[in-house]
Image (cartoon, rainbow, N blue to C red; front, side, top):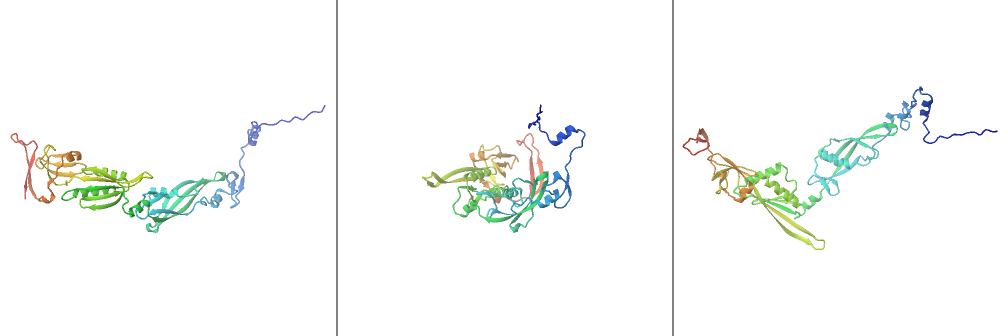
Length: 361
């Protein structure tokens, strides 16, 4: 009888790569290595698995432009009045030139970096008046054959200037929403002047739109009520003062249910300055009744000129029973100390602390 041919088929699970099949039949055979091919550009011998489109790594880096989709010239907008930079529409941030904040703002404006790694971003120095900002980007990407490429690209930003929305409102009249009236009703407002210098030193006037001088102090205008309230609370931490608030309706729209309300904060600073002579009320302090103002800060520091004892009076205690100065620095006289001796207390004397006797001229 005729013998029928027998055919066998391998399933997908039984299929094995050619190299694995050869290793099964010849376990001592050497491992297969990729062949060496010549680069189509420079002719250099390169392993076949380390080529990209027939080129070696050096020719691939020379013929591949990672920055082909990245624009090399962009624009960035700066407010010409306050110096803020536009991050997005109606969003402005404060940043110095060549700072990390401005670097992040410019890096967000880059396009065409999808699928690539930004290895490094750094500033390239330009003239401050040139209205140009330059960034040096280091891009990294992996192409065919596992070849990692890096490329430096220089991006230039042209600085355009215009006013932000806040400065446009300041340029118009009566656009403030809150006002802080800072007052000190004294013979000479030296405490108010020192308070003004502290506000400038600690950079606490960044939200102030406009400052106007009045006969008894300053009027600070703000765009928002929260900014004025925060400014008033900072002043109370620097000087003994009390705060009163009021509000007035400017306009109202019944159809939309909106209204324009202005808020006023009156901050009155204690009418005392350093080196003032004060007459303390009865029971106001453990010293007195005459005392010298040694320091004016968040609280009053008083010193007894007879016993040299000093006390601290809080702003709440002062405004609960306020008092004014009976003599200021203008009434003081200058003396030259010639000699000084310590006066020791004796058993017959009522003095509890040692005093001093000074010879003046």
